[in-house]
Length: 409
Ligand SMILES: Nc1nc2c(ncn2[C@@H]2O[C@H](COP(=O)(O)OP(=O)(O)OP(=O)(O)O)[C@@H](O)[C@H]2O)c(=O)[nH]1
Ligand SMILES: [Mg+2]
Image (tube, rainbow, N blue to C red; front, top):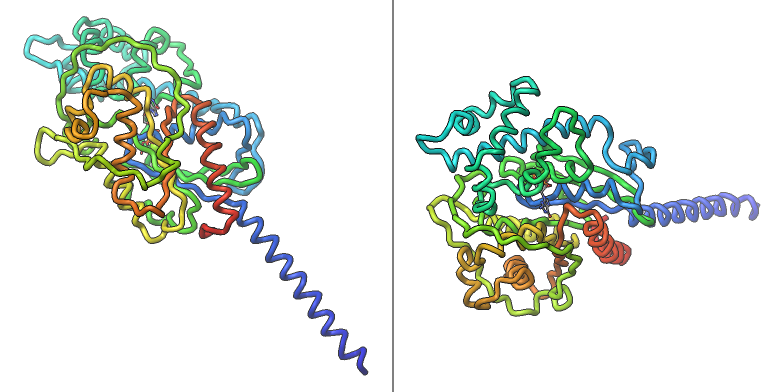
């Protein structure tokens, strides 16, 4: 009688133990799943970071059904992507020439420049041989060459052309095959939201890349739930640019001094003290015309609104201060204080990358409570080793906080 009444109890206990151990295992597995969001305004370098992950040595890409893709998929780009890149890169070059033609346009300028300025769409519709002939003709014009020499840091000059212009001999030919480096430098605006998933050390990472244009931002909120980490990307080179959606300002440089730019692996010293430092900038760039927004100011504003979002209150925030190579190039001919007069009050006469980057970083930290941590890194997203190293540093922090159970997932 007694035995008979104990048996169902023991069965129930066993079942309970099984359920508890299953829950424990699921919790552990969940803590190893990490959802990361790449946010930032357009052209800040989010998709470039994602592209670099194809080259990471320490990770395996996982497809939507969670089965592993062949490992060699990660060794670069597939054939379709390479063929697609031929056309995207040519369009990048035509767009850059179009912007420049619009600036140097005056009455006695020749018909090819006019074609770029007014009807560049026609060039993209031409036979390949004619398209290449036109690209090669215009790039040899003295006015175009001079423009690149004197005004390479003009805000209307797209960032990618610093890389593509010196490589035109190789690119503007009929049998051109893009190299991985070419694809890293190409510019393709992200529309919609893209996700890649990959195993990294003991974790499975879902990395979500969004489009940064104003019209794309309303889609972001749908992905804010359960975010372990936000990687906010900002272009340091945007300090003399206005937003893409606004007309560009015209700012002249004094001619480019050639200098070699070292690859930078730099973790901000401000990470150690977080927001206890006195924030010395009050930000806000001087803009020429009403209605225009400086792109750096826009990035700071956007960061602030995201930082205050209720859904992201427990997420870890990483700040990627990107395009340090272009910042160095610009600072060799432009004084940062011409755009941000407050910089002069903070530190006078020092136009170095380190000092300007620290000022920009403090703009992002301004107004944060001491317990609101952000981890800032100076990066060059076009350099794989730089992104891989920085990503590893970030993951150390993110995984540690995740296992402490401080995040939602
Ligand atoms: N020189 C240089 N170029 C960079 C760097 N990072 C990104 N770029 C270039 O900047 C351009 C824009 O980069 P994307 O990654 O497409 O920017 P995004 O943030 O994804 O832009 P949206 O998709 O419009 O939101 C590309 O041509 C990149 O090659 C960098 O560190 N240095
Ligand atoms: Mg993108």
